[in-house]
Image 1 (tube, chains in turn brown, red):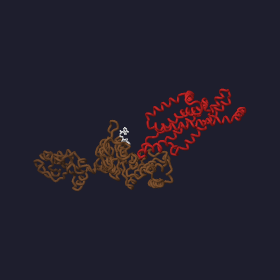
Image 2 (cartoon, each protein chain N blue to C red):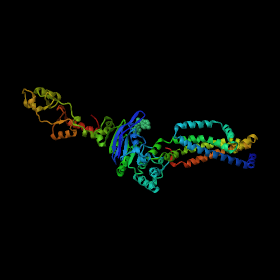
Image 3 (cartoon, rainbow over the protein chains, first blue to last red):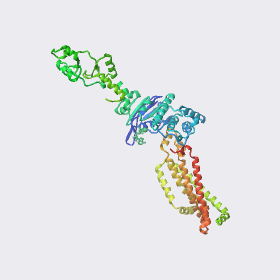
Length: 373
Length: 214
Ligand SMILES: Nc1ncnc2c1ncn2[C@@H]1O[C@H](COP(=O)(O)OP(=O)(O)OP(=O)(O)O)[C@@H](O)[C@H]1O
Ligand SMILES: [Mg+2]
């Protein structure tokens, strides 16, 4: 539906948009988000040619928009801006009907359309049609702003922080309304915000921008699970933890404080170590730090005072997992096998940690309260 | 006092005639001033650099004393109403011009951008957004001009244009106090009345939505 190919834009010497390419599908709700000044508004305004790119092309339904007359183009694209966007010298009805009138719709059709639209947001025409913007609440004004953008039935609607100035309750209600309208009318919407909650709530796809570049373009779900950079993680704040723990690997939650010893040690040394570390089992490795087996305090007691290296009596029956397997899977194995711990090894079969019940608690806490660790 | 009233009654025809001529002069001059100032002010709002220059020059012209200008007009156009109207119209221009220019340039740029963004041509933006939003300022300019011109127009009698100035100047040269008082008072009264009338019209043409300022 909308395709950016290699778009760049500089104001003076500073590059504001840097080789931007992405594609928006029909009926998709895209949210552009990122720190202030990252180029969201600039990107949006290039779609209706309020700003012209220096390089690259933008295609809408396969047509390069630089070849379309700006006025014709804009009448096919709804545009909602923050706060003042309604013309104060026009009534609600006149504001909504601007574009249909520019497109030479008949008067009856305009009135009918206004009634129909006002109905959608529960603002009866008889009560509100003839009011001026100053006679409406902020939320009502912004509703009318959205209706004006929808009036001539454009397939694409651009919204630049449309709810930025509203109180949280009104904003929440309008978000629901707009999302419902979009789904009902199957519009393609490009929506700019710097509120991550809003983005997560509204978007089919979030485009995270920084310094004129796309850092990540992903579904809300995916962005939560795998934020592509620290800036995005920061923007997500605590929300990030939810999805995260499901997707992190065993390595993230393993306990690295592992009590191990080498196979050539004697019984007595092992007992000493267990006493000192207050554990009842030790992992035994060969000289290359590779797994040989485990030995428990019972094993040692059974053997008594017999001399010789413990390597001869180790129990090789243990669960080894690779560090990259999903934490969730590791926890399931831990529960299924009813073991005290799983041993985590890396690609070189080196023992790097264990997964035990404490690891699970840590993961659970992370999911509930954010990044405590 | 009764002497003054008899004077008024005796001279009422002359007084009314002067008054009518005066009002006529003012209306024509301000009307011409509008015809020149509003379009130029509108055009200047598109060329802000040129605008500063033009407004500067017009401002300087404005500071030339009215009598000097009337002298020039007398030299070029002779005596009568024509040179008077030309000079008065010139003086009417500045307040209307600056108010039109400022009124349009001070329309919030968000409105202009919204208008552009939804696909209005620049002519449509001018007539549907900028001029309606600047209208109140423009009318204020007209009001200021009119009140000025009503007093400037008393000078027009000096080059034979007639009006309330006739009463005043004749009164001064014949030391007739009554004439001076009548001329001056009438000029003051119509200035107040016409000013109020224009204020009323201004209120009338301003949409409800613009009256309640946020
Ligand atoms: N017309 C312009 N002339 C010069 N610089 C501009 C212009 N428009 C935008 N910029 C600069 O381009 C950068 C990006 O601006 P843009 O409005 O796209 O940011 P944004 O991501 O929408 O930010 P915000 O969240 O604050 O609205 C900013 O640094 C801004 O100062
Ligand atoms: Mg912005």
